[in-house]
Image 1 (cartoon, rainbow, N blue to C red):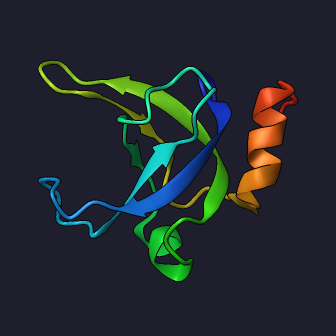
Image 2 (cartoon, rainbow, N blue to C red; image 1 turned 90 degrees about the vertical axis):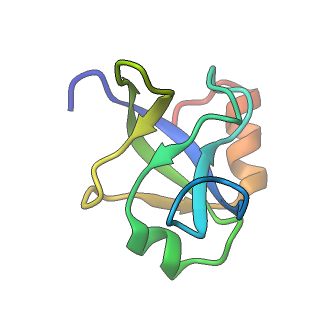
Length: 97
């Protein structure tokens, strides 16, 4: 998994986006990525937990030619569910995930 790093992401609903996915994922603030950036991740993960769940995943920044940058994690990789308050504290204190 070279060029990957652990990042805290959260799920959310955004029906105004041009996507077939009703639940999307984005990084939490303070990790060097815009909250407007999206995360391509497991649809099963997004569907099996309530909207707003925070996960720790290994991601890579993808920059497709002519498209928006996004974070990518392989759909079958393990992930950790973590309380949002715990994730935010670890981000603030710069404690590794």
